Length: 368
Image (cartoon, one colour):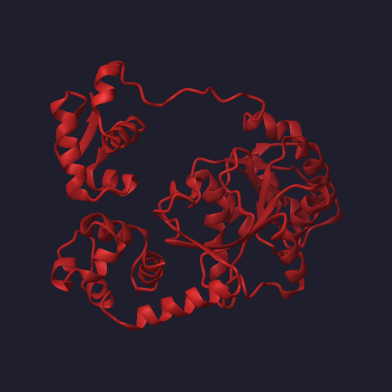
C-alpha cells in the first residue's frame, strides 16, 4: 500500500509524464527513492526540469494521493502503475501511455483477441445494423471489445456486446465516479459485471473536452486492431484510427453510402490506404490472424544450454528484452526491465564478458 501511495503521488506531480517518470525511476532505482533523493541530484538526471525536481518535494501531492486512494477504496476501484505486472501489456508499448490506470470490473485487456470499435456519435440505422452484424459474426472468437461509452457507435457496440455475452470495456474521458454521459451510467454499471471501465483520471474527475481526444490513445493502445464502424469527415474516430496506425495496430473500416456524410470518414480511410475494407467478421479474423495457432516456443534463442543454466533470472530477463530489437539504449533497457540503471549496467557487463552482447557507442547494446 505504501508503494502505491508513492506511485499515485508521482502521477500528481506537475510536469511528470511517462518519459520523465521513466528517467526518475531508472536513475533513482524506484518510485519511493525519487522522493528521498535531494532536488539537486534530481536536477542532474537527463530530461528532468528544475520545476519537476522542486515539485516532487511539495507535500501537497501526498495529500492528493491519500485522497485518491480513499476514493478508490470506497468505490472498489483498482489502480495499475506503468511498471506493474497487471498494467496492460499492449499499452506499455506506446510512447505516451498514462502512468496510472484506474479500473473497475473484470478487466482483461491482455486477452489475445482484443479489438476497439469507434465511430460517429450520430450513428445511422445503417451503421448500427452493420455493427450488429459484424459483432454477431465475430462472437464465436470471443473477443474483448473496447470503446468509449459515447453516444452513437460506442454505446451501440457496448450494448450489443452485453446482449451477445461478449466482454466489453469502456475507456472514459472522466473519472470512474463521474460517468459521462450520465445517460449511460446504468450501462456502465452493467459492464462492470461483463467487462469494465478504465480511466487515467482519478475517480471524481469531471469530464473536460480535452480529455476525450487524449483517451483515444488509450483505446488505440489497448487493442490489436481498431474498427471504424461509421464516421464523418472529422471526429474522434478518425483521430483514434490515426493513432492506431502510428502504434502499428491494424485499422479496419466498414464502407458506407457515398451520399451519406457519416460514411465519408470510413470511405476516405479506405481510399487513402489508411484502413482495410471489411464487410464481415471473417475479414476481421483473417486480418488479425485469429485462426492461426500461436507457436508455443520460448523467445530465448541461446543455443548453449550449459551457459543458460549459469545465468541469473535478471540476466535472462535482460537478454530476452535485447532479443526483441536490434539495439537499445541503457536507460531504456533498465526502464523496460524494472531493474535500476546501476544494477542493469553491472549485469550487462557480465553478459558482455560471456560474449552474449556487445556494448556500442552512445550507451547502446545489442546481442552478438
